[in-house]
Length: 266
Image (cartoon, rainbow, N blue to C red; front, side, top):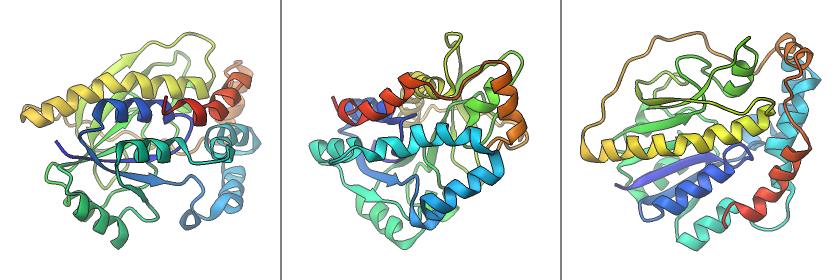
């Protein structure tokens, strides 16, 4: 099966993406890479200001550690090194539904589009460029915690429940039918950053199962109720996490984000 992988190069998913590419290098025919601070989203200053107004200052260290810090390491990024080593075309995704991405998909001729920590929404016309459509690995137990930072919303619950879901891509965020799901038990005391990394890694076996079922034509899709969308968290939610000692980022997360550039392709 020919796969077009779309991802956002960032600390929460870097190691999971690297491991997936090592396992499936012969199947991946295109890597679509989005940038955390791409100009089309307003660039780092405007995006930072939006996050500050929406979520307050507590979220900024989490975003900086996981999305800005990995990009500060000099030299080619981990994803660029992997793509070059495996001979996989690497496409910079400015607009996933724009003509440049459509041309890249037509040239690659994938059977399936795979989203693994990607930050743009695929339009029906884009998904139609792959005969099997698209799937996504989401680090929560959908339909709970639809949205960009599900681990924060899971941590905010009195008794957090973590998990991973593989589901169909749909024009609405995290709303497609569920192909597979698994609860994940995480060690107590993990930061949100460490939990996000662990959940993406824990989702890889589930993703392999879904891909095998799709290739064999045996995949079963379960509809799920559409629960409320969980956006970037409001200040009150972050204050509640802090009051209960649930941290977003620690020194080990900074080290992991920085070192990811040296280890993800190893």
